[in-house]
Structures are given as structure tokens and as C-alpha cells.
Image 1 (cartoon, rainbow, N blue to C red):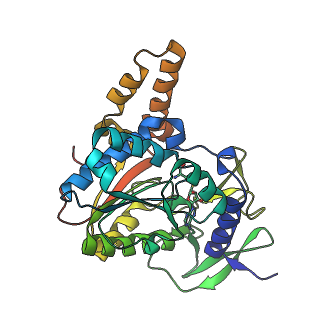
Image 2: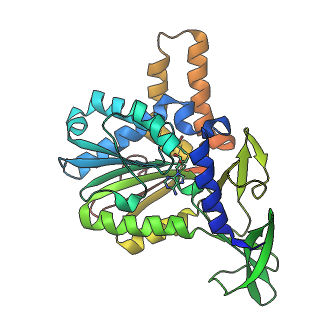
Length: 325
Ligand code: SAH
């Protein structure tokens, strides 16, 4: 059996996974927990658009739109509060799964689909992405003696093959992850934003400062599963290295804002007042459910701290909502 490098395995497994099933049987995400999440991200994009000088037309894009919930909520909020942007925007979605494209088409009429962020048409860009970077493949190196090995997958298990040393530091036996695909996305996007204008908002999970460790995980039926067991049967993710993504975006020419923990970011965008407004006049049970959703998104032990928001944008843009204290 030939050994497959971990990033190739992860890319193949996730492509098969997302192409073959509705992933929401296995996990849930912020836009599915509260409609306010997509609404607030939509209004974030509207403020960025105004700071850009309100270009018309402007590309509003989402990477990895899942069921289309985030964008549906964002478009509704934009239409109600910034109709000028609603009229100016051209909706583009970056999605590789035909199954999810079909779900998105039912909710987001008029959208145009692409396989890669690099395929988006030229022009000023507003990009939103929630839990997109975590699905991109990572490489893993293991410190062995004076050198390194790289993890490959064969027969459902890791095998280590000799590797050239990455520019990293770790103790004997420690695993160091390299999110090359996320860095490549950020580098290309940074160059594009610097040249053509715009702002991109990534919300994802990972620590502030990357430490050695294996963060590869698989979710199946909402429970942890063996990431290597059955390629395509479980959702594979890894922690996002925000410092590396920000550095890659800057190297491309963009400015980076954040990362800011999701709980703080959403509070600054006005999650509290929005939830109160939604709860007004609702049944006690509905109001309690709205509050519970907001707590799940913001409380530190839930999604409030591990999840973070990071923006890449044209260097001339001012601090965007949620990133200035
Ligand atoms: N943003 C959504 C979905 C998160 S799941 C939400 O918050 O609910 C990850 C999404 O990214 C799915 O839509 C998946 O099909 C898509 N995706 C995963 N890898 C991708 C890739 N390499 N290129 C494009 N889309 C990808």
C-alpha cells in the first residue's frame, strides 16, 4: 500500500465527504445556531463597503457557504439597512461540493459558483468565510532526533517518512502542523485585495499562538471519530494558525486586523441588542432559545474564545467593526 501525504489524504477525504452528504448531520456551525451571526457579518461587510467608497458593482462572496444560511441572513440584513449595497452587490459563492451547491442555489438565487477563491472575477471584493480555513488540508511534521519526519497515511494509520526540516522548533516526538493551503489562500487574497480593493473576514477556530500539537480531528454523527479510519465518512478539520494566515495576507500586500475572539467580536458588532430585539414579543421559550444561542456563540468555554475573527483588507481601510476596541 502506498503512503499518501497527510494533506493529500485530507484533501481527498474532505472532497469525498462534502460531495456525498449533508455535513450538518455531523456538526453545527455559528450561522445555524443563530440568525444574528449572518446578519452581523452582513452588516460588517456593509460598513467595509462604505469605507471602500461604496463601489458599484462590488463582489460579495462567501467561501464554503454550507447550507447558505449565513449569506441568506446577511443579505436580508443588508437589504433592510443598506439598500445601496444590496443593489450594487454581485453574489459569488466558492464551493466545491455539488450537493451543497444545490442546497445553496435554493436559498441564494442569482449566485454564481466557483471552485476556488482565485477564480472569483476581478474587482472590489467583500468576502465572508466561516469555518472554511479549518477544512483545508494541513501537513504534519514530527521531530525525530536532529531532524524531522512527515506524517503520511497508509492503511488507516500514520506512517512517518523522512522529511526536510521545516523552519520550526519542537521537542523530540512533538508534532508541528503546517497549514500550507490556508497560507496560500491568504497570500493570494492579500495580493488581490491590495491591488483591487476590498476586505475579507474569516471566522474559524484555533489558538492565538500556535504551539506544537496534533489538532487534526474528525466528527461523525456529532461525535469525535478516528480521522484516518474511513476517508470521506467524517468531516476532517485542523486548527487554523491565525498568525500564519495574517502573515501570509500581509506578505501578499494586504493589512490584517485581528484575530479577535469570536465572543468579543460579536459583542462589539452588537449581538446583545440584536438578540434582545429578536426576542421582544416572542414566547418565553423562543426568547430563551435565542439567548441560549447567543451564549453558545460568545461564552469562553463554548465558541467564544477558541473561535476567532480575522480580517484581511486593503491597507487604506480604517479599523473595521469588531477589531477596534
Ligand atoms: N460556512 C458554513 C459551512 C462550513 S463547512 C457554515 O458556517 O455553516 C465547510 C464548507 O466549506 C462546506 O461548504 C464545504 O463544502 C466547503 N469546502 C470545504 N473545502 C473546500 C475547498 N477546498 N474549496 C471550496 N469549498 C470547500
